[in-house]
Each structure stands twice: as C-alpha cells, then as structure tokens.
Image (cartoon, rainbow over all chains, first blue to last red; front, side):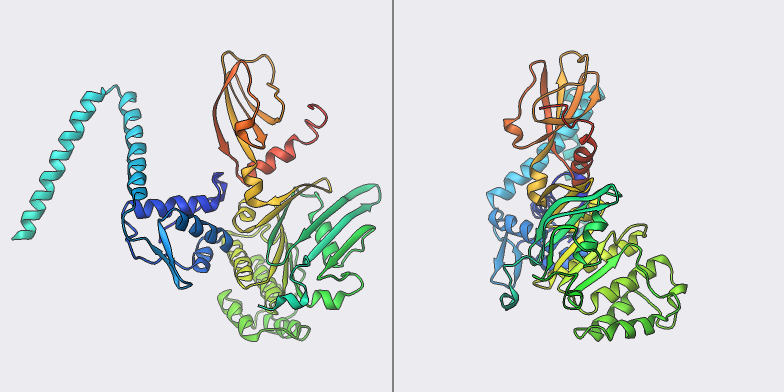
Length: 137
Length: 306
C-alpha cells in the first residue's frame, strides 16, 4: 500500500493516513476484501508510532471504509458505500475547482471549457472503442 | 501480560518539582512530569533548554538539588544497579572505548545484563552491518551510533532513554533509530523517553510531548491534544494596519500590509475577531510550528499582552 506521511504537514498523521486510504479505496486502487497491512508493519514502513496507525484504522472502521475480521486483520469493506460515492464526488469537485481556476487564469470561458470536456470525452470513448475492437479480433 | 505485578499503574518515570542550578545559572526550574508505562515521551527544546540535564537526573547521573526523581519507583541515585539494568541509554556523544573491537564490546556489555538477548544482538549487528573485528575507533559516526543503539537495545530494557540520538547523523542512521523506537514500543509495556530538536521525528513517534524552555516545562500534553489546540489564523485587513495587530488570545503575529497571521490556542471557533479584518482561513500547525511559535514568543511578548 503506497502511503506517504509528512509530519510537517500540520494535518495530524493519523488523518493523513485516513485520507489516503479513503482515497485509495474511492479510486479503486484498494478493492473490496483486500487486506490492509498489519498495524505494526505499516508503522515500521512509515516510521511512525503504531498507536497512530491504530487510530487511523479505527477511524476508517467507524467510517465504514474498512472492517476488522476478529483479530485477524483489517479489510476493505465490500459494498461501495454511499460514503465512497460522496468521497469520489468530493475528489472530482476538487479537480474541477482546480480546472476552473486554471481556465479563468487562461481566460477560457466556462462554456468553452464544457465544450472542451465533451470533445475530450468523445475522443477518449473513441480510443476505448478502438482498443475494444483490437481485443475482439 | 502480567506487568501489573511490578506496578502497571505507577508511572515509569516520576519527576516532582525538580530544580537544578549550575552556579548562578538555573538549568531546571520546578520541573514536574510523569511518564506512564508504554508511552513514547518526546522532550523537545532548544540547545541549552535543559533536556540533557533532565535526562541525566532520570539516569541517576545527577542528584536532585530540590525535588525528587523516581524511576520504576526507585531513586536512581541510590539504586543505580536496580534502575540501570532496566534502562537502555543512548546519548548524542555516546562514549565507547575506541580501542575495543565491536565483538569485544558486545561481549563486554553483555556481561552486565542478565536479560541480554544474544539472538537479538546478532540480528541487530547484521542489520546494521557492523563488522565484528573492526575497532570502535575505526567506525564512522553513524556506525558508532548504531553500535550504541545495539548495546542499548540488546537487553530489551523496559525503558529506553535517548538523548538527542539523531543529532548530526545522516538520514539512514536516523531511520534506524526511529525504527528501533517503533519496535521498542510495539513490544508491549515498553516505554521510551527521548529528547530531540528534530521535531518531525518527535511528531512521528511521540505519544506525549513536553516542551522545555529555559529550564521550565512550558507545555506537556498528548501530541494529538497539543496539535488540536493550536491554529494559525490568517486575517485580511480592509486597509493595512498602522502597527502589528493585537488581539486577546493571539500570539506570534506575522505578516505585513493587509495580510497578517497569528497563532491561537484553544477552540478557533470561539476566537475573538477584529473589527477591521476578516478571517480568511485557519490551519492546523505542525509540532515544529507550534514549537517555534511558543518558544520565540516567550520573552518577546511576555508581560506585553494580558
């Protein structure tokens, strides 16, 4: 599991882990049923206090993102919860905000941007189709 | 775990009203702190703040002039053997006999500790790539620190005391030291006291943090509590103020022109507002920023605001 923490970030370290795992789940990098690394192992990997990892896992469990199977381990929850959807939308909103800021900066109107998004979408779909055809052969 | 038999509820280190003078200089002034079992306790402060003096008292290397020190419920000055056999110690200037070979020093040290774990010592030696036949004098600074760490850990002490362990060492050695701290606490019931001015390291591993400044403990809290009690608040003024802004509860003002920021301790939602400025944002602070704000605003603003 690729996680990075930076204690200098102001945001508490457990919260950084929480956010990143949440993101990895929402973006599908971590899939339902997948096991998270044991607390001690992640603490040693990230060089942080195991209590901090334990706290992050606890909060992830409360949020329904992961679940504990007895004392065996911590696993990514099954159903994509409404929470995961909310989280996906939150991530997208952030990206859109950044995009809008860039567009404004470059003097591109929102309408033009929307057209551009549709255009890109068509191109990407086209590429997918082509790839699909190659696979079908 | 049956650690209860030797007093799980009693703090491992208990210091009460400890004061120490060196001539006219006050090195420690009325210091009280207690370190519960199983906690990583970070002691932070600038050079000369009193960290090492405090640690030397906990090790029984200095006798309390006023106040009391107890480790495992014992006075470390009058019970050096009983206390030190359960304490692993690594200091910044760890003095090892230059002429001894690594292997000899390991064997020599082992003789003092009934709880010495040979297999653990060997695995540490291999991990640290310490060559048994090299003399201590021939080791690099980093390898000496690793050897010191090996000697401090191999009898699996109940209390690990590290005095500025990372000072002047490269990142690889610092990583080994951090890993050692993490492994020590992952084993139940072990306690760590370490001093450092590398605050990102403290923030990584500490459960509790005490900030010492001019021989006084000015802050002693859970790391989480400490971090959630300070914020930096950014103000935007309608027009640039004539002088540095002042507002009850805020300190460490920085900025200029229309944008100023200050630290606030407490619930930021309850914080006072300025009539001619709006709060643009407030952000949590890293331990480093909290430390700088607290230490640099001392003296400068002491008595200056209510």
